[in-house]
Image (cartoon, rainbow, N blue to C red):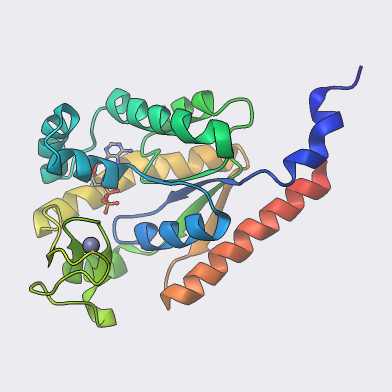
Length: 238
Ligand code: ADP
Ligand code: ZN
C-alpha cells in the first residue's frame, strides 16, 4: 500500500507555509514578519508581542515575564514553549501554516518546536542578517505603539515620541527594554543562546540567511523570493 505522503503529496503543495524568522534584536523581524504573514495568509506569532500584551494586561504570565524582559534576559524555556504550543494548537490545525517571530531562541526551544509541529515540522528558518553595529543604531531610534505594538524607526520619518500611532491612535514611545544596558544584554544573549539555534537548523538543512540591510521593501522582496524558491524546491523534490 502506498504511504500517505506518496498519494497525497500533491495536496500538500497548496498547504500554507511554516516559517521561522531569526535575527538580532533590531534586525527588522517584527516589520518583516507582519508583511510575510499577510502575504502568505498565515498567523504571525511573536513571542515578544504576546509577552508585552501579557505585561499590559497584568496576567500571571505577564507578572512573571516583566522582570526578565526589563533586564533583557530570556524567560524560562518551559514558559515560552507552553505559550507557543497553545497558540499553534489554536491555529495550525485549521490553516497549517504559521510564522514564528522571536521563537525559538534557544536550542531547547527549537527541539520543542519540532516536537510540537511533528511530523511536518517547519519548512524554512530564515536568519535575517543585520550586523551588530547596524542594529545598535536602529534600536536607539526605535519607537513602538504602546497599544498595538506597531514599530516606527525614527530615521524613516516615523512619529516622534509625543506622536500618536497612525494605526490605532494610542501613544507611541520608546520600548521599555530599549535602554542602552538592556540592548547590550539582549545582543549578548543573542550571540550566546540564539546564534547556536541558527547552526542547529543549518545542520538540519532548514536554514537560509537573508541580508536584512537596505530599504525595508527591498528586504521584503528578498524574503519573498527566498520563501518561493524553497517552496519550488520542495515541490520538485517529491
Ligand atoms: P527583541 O527586540 O529583543 O528581538 P522581542 O520583542 O522578540 O525583542 O522580545 C522581547 C523580550 O521578550 C526578550 O528580551 C525576552 O525577555 C522575551 N522573549 C521573547 N521571546 C522569547 C523566547 N522565545 N524565549 C525567552 N524569552 C523571550
Ligand atoms: Zn497602535
